[in-house]
Length: 337
Image (cartoon, rainbow, N blue to C red):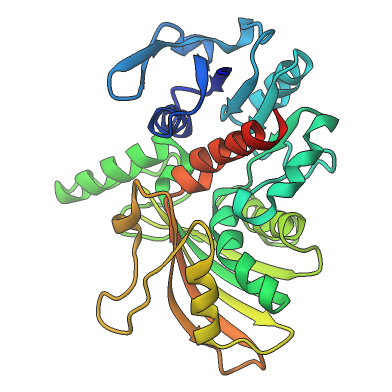
């Protein structure tokens, strides 16, 4: 049986990736509809190697008869469109931040907490976590199952694609401009992004952390374990695709790097590249377009009783967004539909 699938936000970075991955993985869809805002109506978007879809108006679209919605239009739009689709009988997999902390909406990384998908009928909505959270909890799940994690300290190195197409364009234009002595004027970012790093993603909160840092803390607790303490510093860096994270983890019982490496190598969705030599680790430029979460630089932290350091890298548009959503849809089809 094939399903009717709607892709909301089909012209954005994540929406285009969703369409590509649906085709790549031969998702059982009899019909795929591309939806976006009124200004994008009539545009053509690629679906697989040879097919194209014509974008339709999200605001006017009737979701009756649609089975699954893969939604990435931005939180404000999703707040309206996702409940509307769910009310019409579709199951919505929402990639925005709007529903993630709703107690009646499962927040899912299939390799970590697939069983929580069972809670979707409460609202007919499933939330896709933040891109940085997805790759971190994927890497930490097998370790947490072996020795309980008590505290995580993470610093992220997040690519401009996490801020959308305009953010990527700003990096490109600023970099090109500097070479012709055209000094950059920040627009999408608060400061120059070319040849720079910016410790500011999303808005600032009253306690001094940014919303992105809060998301990593709150989402990790919801997905992995509410007892884990998490503190994050999220940094935008001048790369186009791929997020990296330096993760320091404390456990309540002994775990060494040999055990950690074996656990990670056996876990789904993870590839370990960890040779203690020049180049024996992964970087964002190498993993763009890849579906796995890569873990490198696995080593004991000697400053705490039971500590490890990890370097975690993943394509934020794929595993950090589109692929994770489609994996949720695949699990729905396999187990629940």
